[in-house]
Length: 422
Image (cartoon, rainbow, N blue to C red):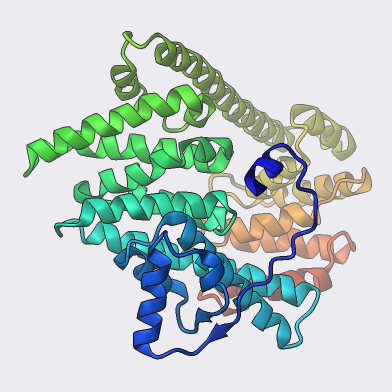
């Protein structure tokens, strides 16, 4: 009756559920209580008077698996134990943000217990009951996730990390777990990209091995992985937008999809075009930055053979590159490069940096970035760079106080090459 009222939206009364108190029972009584919990003919109303103390965390999951407790009853027990754990934390005087933090901590710890529980089941796949245990574990984890009793981010991070680093024996087990949560993995952009990348990495890794010690196992895993890739490319094609890895994985993905599955092939063609556009944009951005770099160096070299008009040259260089950070850092690199000759570069760079400072360009941040990125560079003459900084300090265009704060904040004093930075 309550289920029908809730389905029709008429059950609007506030929840009056109170978790049953926990009591300390002897081992025999606790075992009897757990056997009654596994028996669906015994109503939960009789069991909800008290629950045994000490059944929590990983032990709770192992007891449910060992006694084959129905999933709905195992969920009820997990909710009761969790509510008691959170209520005990609140009794200690925590309130507000501390209470929320305690609940978050319990969920993360409970999620870690579920992950260890599934890892243990996968690790015992040589036993005679591993299929039943795996089915039970998958079903329980799926319902725990649906009921909001797991930290989704932590759970998916564990699953995708295990999938990425698993060997041939355990790969199919983690893929089986992922298949039950395929839609939820694809809904999150980060987890979807990681999942697609892990599947393609595993296939590519196996193809690089010339001879497999267990060819039958390899072929079975390869078929299952390919099926999962085809299924995922249909349900979440955006997860395969991998422009950096596309050149490596594209031939393999094309052979997996084939042309027999029309929907999967259409998704693949769309992904191929989008990855091609993203790769072209990435190349054009790198090409534009390289052209701007070369233009700045060419303009700076021209100042060595012609009368210097620092204001005009500063404006001309701004027209070459709109990125002021790139402009300042290339100017510093040019002034200290071992591939250029003459002391004039130092004073040209100083005058240009002063001009840009007068135009409202922030020169301190690019200088600090240059120091941090170039402290180990072998093609820079650092005494020339120090001369540029000294001249800027002398004219009050660079603050020594803020520089020392930056050095301390970044922990550069403790590095082996601290003398080259400071």
